Image 1 (tube, rainbow, N blue to C red):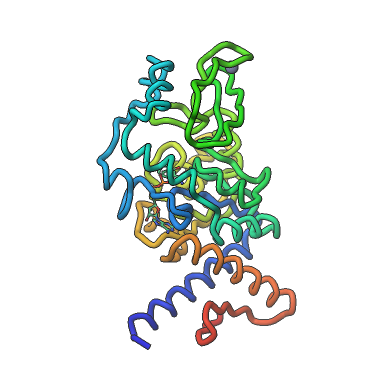
Image 2 (image 1 turned 180 degrees about the horizontal axis):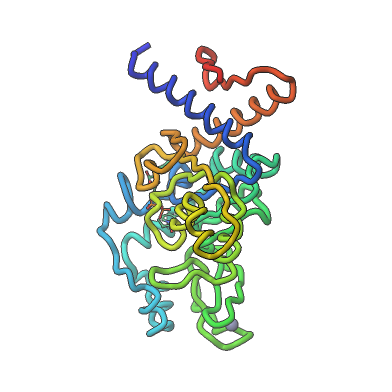
Length: 302
Ligand code: NAD
Ligand code: ZN
């Protein structure tokens, strides 16, 4: 085998082993996912290679202000496809996407108690379709739902492409928009509070497929990392910083503050992580020295 491939396989196995051990040693593990989680389902991210903004340019960042100024005009443009090319491509890919093995592995990680909750920045609903239940927080909403900007009442649209202009809210009469959070729009306070609560409980956070650049969601990763400083400022009990694990094929702003970085895609990384933590748990249960295999040849042990 090519020595370069050999080296990266050894490194991948070692990093995966370290990630599995951190998860097994932690009491409360939370995952935070971003657009990269769904790339292998055919939904392009915004940034990076094949990113929609890389292809079409960075769009205007005041979408929410424009919506508030003229909701009827917004919906008219949506229905008549007078919208940015990147949104046309995004909504078509959302419509055609199916969850991949990484989404299903994530559901198993939650069901088996390795991960307590998943905060996703994604608006594609693929985690729900993979079977994720109440442990999911869609911090940026879900594009296949509608939400009232007054009382936050949500209704299912069950599609990513609107065929009609939605009526104003039947509870409070305010305009209705996609549940997906627009640039310049505040995150729904209850949703932000739920995400913050999970981050505050976590002693380990796994960041998957996020460039960690979209605030305030990505800021939660730094909150977890620098907890003691923040807690002291708020006069709360000092707790240790959470451990951070990153799964991403590319370096990000987060990489340098992570304890473990697994340089691979979401599909390969999350499925391998599920195998690794299960092997780790079985080995500990049987009193064996844990080793994690990602190939039949390489089994570096702790
Ligand atoms: P981003 O577009 O800023 O960055 C994507 C990240 O994914 C990069 O770090 C990239 O290296 C990584 N990546 C690329 N391919 C990958 C793969 N196969 N596996 C794992 N990682 C991979 O994404 P972001 O940080 O989530 O921020 C963008 C914002 O836009 C978020 O709010 C996000 O929800 C939204 N968005 C969502 C979707 C979706 O719902 N699927 C798609 C595009 C954008
Ligand atoms: Zn309302």
